[in-house]
Length: 159
Image (cartoon, helix red, strand yellow):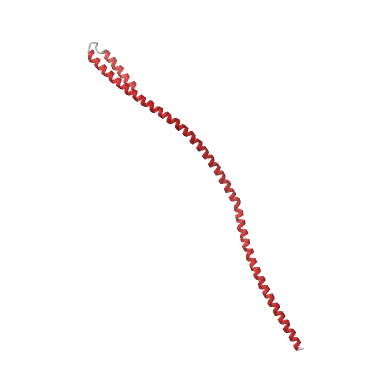
């Protein structure tokens, strides 16, 4: 009987050894799968958290975009107003240039007239001198004094 008990003991031991090896390999495989799955889950959690922080940034970005749009519209309005003002200033500048041209022409005409008047005045003075010389002292020089006063008023009015 001893041989029968030994055979059963050996068979059970072998069976337990095989079962132990199978369970050991299954446990190693399960642990490996669990570890891999744990790493994937941890990686996914990190991605979800990163996505969550990015999702939380979206309202801020939308607010910034709205502010930028408002600023853009304000700047476009300012550009339109400045363009309109620029056109108005161009029209006003053209009018002022016309006025400047007219004033310059008028000034030149006045200078020409003044030169003519000055020439006439010089000729008149010369004529007065000649008259003084011709008249001499026959009338006592009263007419000549009147002519001097007329000459002075002409000089003052020409200036």
